[in-house]
Image 1: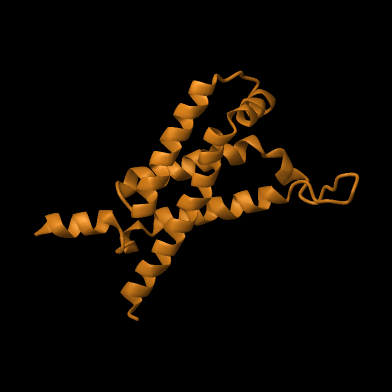
Image 2 (image 1 turned 120 degrees about the horizontal axis):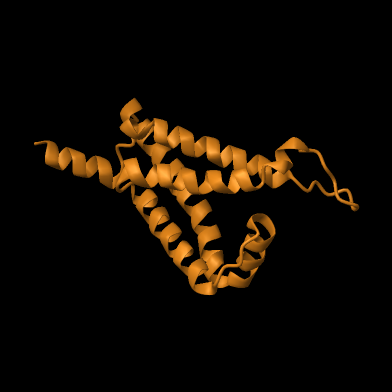
Length: 146
């Protein structure tokens, strides 16, 4: 496998994994909107109607689909990262106490570590768009360059 194809394959795997990760969160907004009402009230102090939660989830799912196929890369990849960055900002307090345990000895902030790893992967994907050759965006660019 050439370096060109190895890079393209690696970025395709990364792109699909990140799109799937965020898609699951978006799909759960549709499946359990009441849970997201509670989260919005707890973290942001706002009350959201179900239609608002469904609309946000729909936009998020659309962005995930664009990322999965590598379409509109200069818009969809940063949009996915900004969406996730919002989550990271809302949970910032957990980064300040990463080893906190609940009364049963279970680590309560370990998901924040996952959040940072995912955000780092999203940043890497954006920085390597020019090597993302196995995507609709690369196909489109090559087709229209001639």
